[in-house]
Amino acid sequence: MESNILLESGTNELELLEFFVGDKDYGINIAKVSEIMAYRPITPIPAAPPEIEGLFMPRDKIITVVDLHKVLGIPIPENTTTLLIVCEFNGLDIAFHVSSVKGIQRINWGNIEKPPTVANNSQRGIATGIAKIDGRIIIILDFEKIISDLNCSATLDMTGVDRIEREDETNYDAKIVIAEDSPFLNKLIVDAVTNAGFHNVTSFANGKEAWDYVSAFENESDIIDKVSLVISDIEMPQMDGHRLTKLIKSDPNLKRIPVFLFSSLIDERMRLKGMSVGADDQFSKPQIGNLINAMLRRLRK
Image (cartoon, rainbow, N blue to C red):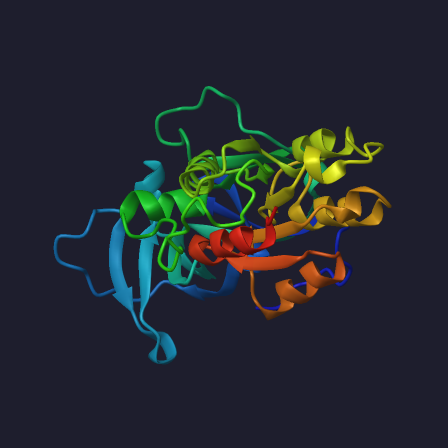
């Protein structure tokens, strides 16, 4: 689908597709969206969770349909022509059944806030941010968690993680910083890194918190002893991963810190953006095994 793609990297901006489920306002990063199409007949999957409507096959590609009305506990409006937002992320092709689409909003990540700690039952744990646009509140959903809750296999893939013994030269004392806004994925990444043998792991819910932590060491001569590696998601409230990377790599001292981007958005275009801001390596979710192996190779004593 067409959108005003942001050409410059590290501006801390995103394009948000605003849509409705019932009369509630939600958003998704346009980078995850392949196309929008009118609702069409869906083939049910036997014994699937009720939130999974089934499958359809446009242009010889099988796509799973998730009904956000059932996920969020909101009835489908009567006499309404509903839509499918077709997405590709985490190696999956998913269409989300929504009531309507309003349009694309360009917004700075700094204007997106953390969701409140207290939320109603239908939204608890599946909101990653709250955007305020022209007096409207748009809830940005954690689509990775929605998919994982419906499909236990849609989580981090540890395939290919090397079984490294302690006599290996990897520095397991290295200080690792992780920036990931999804509480669900944040914990999974921290657990995976810890299980790989690294025990000095500090995680943050967004790039701004990670930057505040890392930049406090900007005058340290032994910077790699303070922060040995940064692993960052791309889309996060307050500050995205591209902006975080650009800030680190623009500092004469901090630029020595390796930065790995780990995101469901990594494709050819996003890879070029990551390279332009100085990312040392980039990995696509959910294949965390590739990231762990790269850490083991990079963090030598």
